[in-house]
Amino acid sequence: MVVKERLAGFKYLMFALTLASCTPPTAERVGTSETGSFPASSTSAAAAPAEPEASAAPKPVSIKPVPVPSPTSLPFLPWAVENCTIDALAPTPYSRAWLRYPKPADWVRPSDPTPLYDSRIPPKPGSIAAKETAAALENAWLQRPESHVLDCSFRLYPRKCPHCVKQENTLVRYVVYLPAKTFTEPSRVNSVLLIVPGGHGGRSRAFLRPINGLTVWDKGSGGLDAKSLADAFYSASPEGEQSLVVSLETSGIQHGSGAVEYLTYDIEQHLRTTFLPRNEPLRIGVDGVSSGAREIIRAAFAKPESFRTIGLHCMACGGIHPERRLLGTRSELLEFAKTLARGRAQGRFDLRMSIGSRDNQLPCNQAYWELFREAGLVTDSDSDLFRVVPGALHDFLFLAQAFPAHLQWHLEKLSQPARD
Image (cartoon, rainbow, N blue to C red; front, side, top):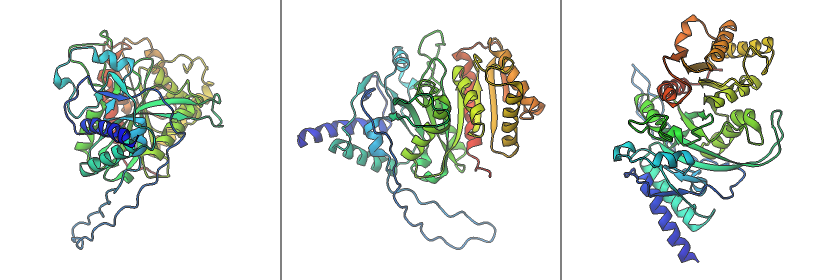
């Protein structure tokens, strides 16, 4: 039994290290299974950091900050090996559609997460295979710290809360981008950006590459290239704080706790206790598309001080149109917008919106912008924060134009230290 387990562990280890070593990917590789049971929680304590080396006396003209010691271990890796696909995207209907197209090798770069067509069962929890794979990855990632992408699952168990919908446990899936400072200065990773999909795309779309020459009408072609965009931003701005970037499978509306708690608490709490050695909550940015943007507005209306940044793409307005009083009365909506305005005035909140000029949701999105203007959240000088893309519809061609600017804007705002 031990010999078989070690042999299985060796095969899985070679697979994981091949993905982590940035070798050119192929469609034949296999990844984490979409089924299985997972632990209720995964709180890990960080190992005590080593003492920094003594430095020379500071020069009179400038004082250099004391260097932050790098971590000596990555406590989250045993959980990740058992519950995530490492540096790859587990199979989904969207990613399988993407893989059906003939693709030149440069469409998937060595640094991209590999989209997989077939599933692979991860090592059993606590097995020799799992331990050896985690140890090998820890050694490799600490020796060469760089960003990584994990496609993960965990069980969300019921709890009692003001906005919880029903008492049942559900399996949650997401893709997380771990920035380089996760492996060098984890104390500088203080925020998370949640990418909330609409009715299409799920968790895969944000981390797939676009396919040249194909459009939204060619199913599965829409990739948003989030990893390379985030890598480029942090390469150009290495001194600031960094964020986890998480692409959700859904807005959480079908989970037991409902979208409000899912977006404002459940995901943040899981990510923080799993991947980062910190007790204080992460600042949350949210970027939503269509019905995903609608659920962000619902969550913000219920808990208006939950988000540091809100980005809304072609927001679908069913059930929340500000002129139909389905979400709240005019006075309630105005008070909500004023709460956001106070947060922005204090440097604790920012907002950005975009939509196509031919999108039938444009009038509702404009009505929200006027509500925000009336409340003092935005002014005439903020016209660049409400972008109307000429000729664009409610589709991926619009999103492909709007997403890169939104992502950079979120990462810039979240990289700034929190203000009390």
